[in-house]
Image 1 (cartoon, rainbow, N blue to C red):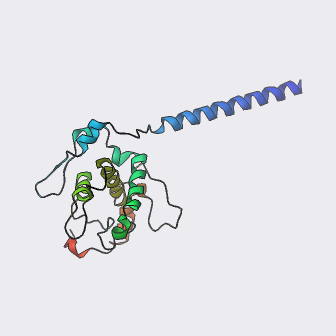
Image 2: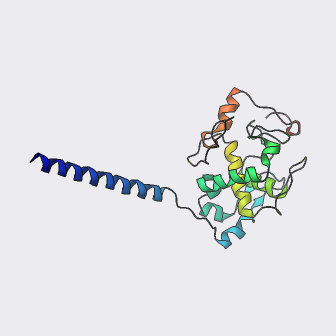
Image 3: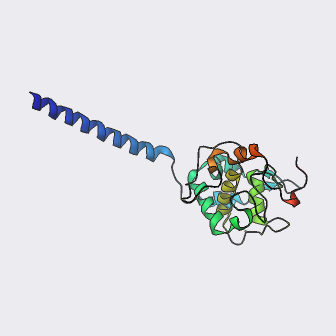
Amino acid sequence: MVRGRTLANRLLLTSALLALTVGCGFLGWMRQPRELRTNPPVLADLSRFRLMSNGIGGAPPESYFAEAEPYENDAYNLSQGKRLYTWFGCAACHGDGRGAAGPSFLDGWWLYGPEMVSIVASIRDGRPHGMPAFRDRMTIEQIWQLAGYVQTIGAYSAKVAATGRNDGPQTRPSENRAPAVMLFEEGPVGVNPDQGPSP
């Protein structure tokens, strides 16, 4: 009789573990579907955003909203943007977001605005005083991925989606933890002289 209970307990435990494993696998699969290749019509539409006459701010294409702002809210696209930030040497000018030869993303003062369209335009077309144009070096999707990552570096509100962490020592909070708010409360980091007076 005791042997029968032990066998029944083992079967029950094994069944529970199997159900838990299958449930966790299903939740992991459902977590966030990945679309590794964007539809060509959507890609073509991404380059048709509208800027205001002063080149600051504007409106993304409607397909961007139809896709639920994937370059701002999707962990895969943010991770790709982080990879591109390294590959194209953005850290040489912007460091880890605190600025160096280029402006800081963490000082609370974005010369051309923190909106996605402004960041995309800055990367695609370049800006005066040293920001090169990347339109001939990157696809439009890569530009949007990089812009999404840059926006998370200077974010003032936390996001659910996040990139992977680096293995090295961390100099600032994780991108999805609103690093700009945490560092800005300590006081602004160095301001680039081209940025003008503080707002």
